[in-house]
Length: 93
View (tube, rainbow, N blue to C red):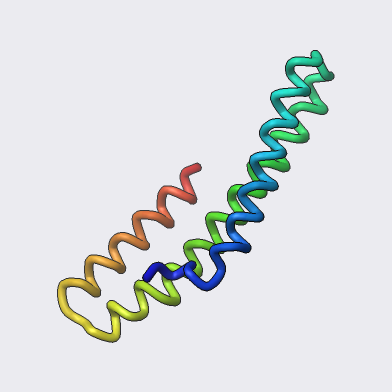
C-alpha cells in the first residue's frame, strides 16, 4: 500500500486541475497571447506541481519512511536515502 492510498482521489483532482492549466497554456500559445501572461500561467502551473510534489513527499515520509524506520535495518536506511534523494531533486528543480 502506498502512502497516498487514502488521498488518491484528492491527488487525482489536483493533477487534473494542473492538466487543465497546462492545456490552458497550450491554448494561450496557439492564440498568440502576450508572453508575460503565458509566463504568469507557467509560474502558476509550476507552483501547483511543486505543491503536489511536497504533499506527496510528506505522505511518503509519514507512511513509507516511518514504517521502514520503525522496522529498522537496511530497509530503513534505503527509504531514508530514497527520500533524501527525492528532496534533493525537488530542491534542484
